[in-house]
Length: 143
Image (cartoon, rainbow, N blue to C red; front, side, top):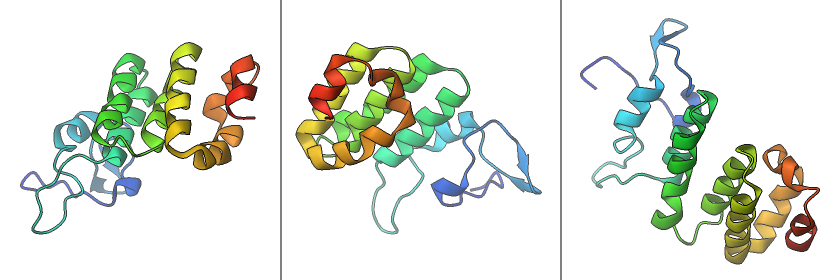
């Protein structure tokens, strides 16, 4: 990019508002929001946002305490990737963190319809969903 920023693999970008890291410029949350539609494209192909990109943006917003924006961002890939169980699963996690168990269970049900085996493999150990464990719906859905 012309502004001197280097985009590394998304898992190497810290989605927190630091401007310097070991002498390298990194993206701030706003820069990540600005560039999310351009990150991760393949040579010769037009790039569309991926579920991973939306998650990174949402998680950065959550870490900033901008939970309403985070919850909106995490819902974006649900429509874009209707066959991806992790999209509604991650939305369930954010809703649980936000103290919205009804929304969390609705998204968890959606994820289970897509891939029950994957969801039941991850959900019991996921600390984001701990607040749901005492709810009767948890045992019914997750086991």
